[in-house]
Length: 335
Ligand SMILES: Nc1ncnc2c1ncn2[C@@H]1O[C@H](COP(=O)(O)OP(=O)(O)OP(=O)(O)O)[C@@H](O)[C@H]1O
Ligand SMILES: [Mg+2]
Image (tube, rainbow, N blue to C red; front, top):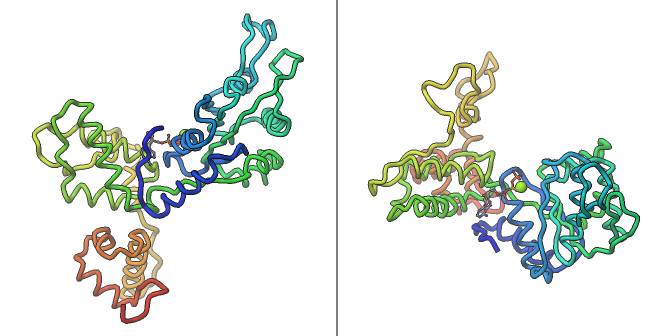
């Protein structure tokens, strides 16, 4: 089973949910933003189930046209279409006794959705061009970063299939909601990269790099973190010095062609156009309070982490929290 890193409470709760859902044979959906680790979670559902000795077959539904997806999933009989020279067992048959992961499920056509629904209902498939039915015992795990309920409401995803697939839904939290895991993941990825580069050791991230890793929003989640860390390690000289700069954006260059989109970090900094006239003092105070609340939320009320996110000392942060009376709603005033 591929190793999964993460100890943030929201992440552990999700893993606990996975362990509870794994032994069932009912379909399950794994949803979450891109790069959050849905594929790892789908594998974990298989390897923690009684099906672990049988196959797990993963299909990326977005990568295939409807007719290819159909013959990949259901198989075909020889002669069923030009080029079908031999009988071919599809993924449903290959995964018999095991798990079939339908990745990027939201892209499947309505007609294929209907065929998939029939397998879930009756456990039977027919190969393309065939008339015989084959019984299959397959656990289906669907994965997507799309809003399936929204798509269903818009008539683009079958409600009945969604009801069946969503017997239970596992939502993988985005990285920005588990800041506690950022440095652990970054160190693990960096150590792997250093050993891939046959470097004797990974000297670690310096304070500037650590704080940059913690402050960034990670819209591409763990995949983006992994790429940024690996890039930073391999670009750094192998001289035993700590890494101080994180290469967030591979396109970042003083020579990049003009007219390209601003760097992701710069886009994140962009603000709304100011409304005038304004009470400057009040507006600055409101903004300060907004940032403090956002940082405390992101840091899960860990004041040292929040101070770091804002570039303040611990004492400066404490002072400002008092000034705006910001505390966890459950806390009493003398905490
Ligand atoms: N908790 C984790 N521990 C270790 N590696 C992780 C973790 N989560 C994600 N990764 C790594 O991050 C990368 C992206 O993960 P994965 O492909 O599972 O994401 P995904 O949610 O399926 O993304 P997408 O929606 O783009 O398909 C992979 O290289 C994976 O190994
Ligand atoms: Mg994926």
